[in-house]
Amino acid sequence: MNRVCYYIMETEVDEKGEYIPCIVEENKGGFHRTDWRWGKDIKIARQCAKEKNEALELTNEDVDKIICSSMWPKQPLPA
Image (tube, rainbow, N blue to C red; front, side, top):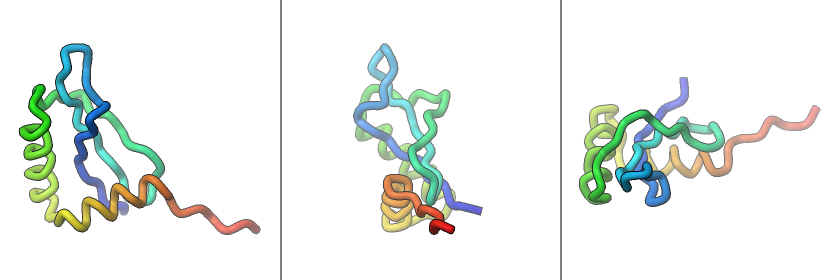
């Protein structure tokens, strides 16, 4: 099973300006928006994401790797 992490992007906000946490799955392109809102302060929202990732026993390096893998997911080799 692929690892997942929480991530706050500056561009993912609702109409009230509240940050929407995203879930990123390792080796899968893109991300999924959650139904949650973590306030208007990006520092607090990112701290919430960090705490959620720590609860998943992910280091900052793990999170970086998961996020990078979603930008360039592994492609199957041609037959």
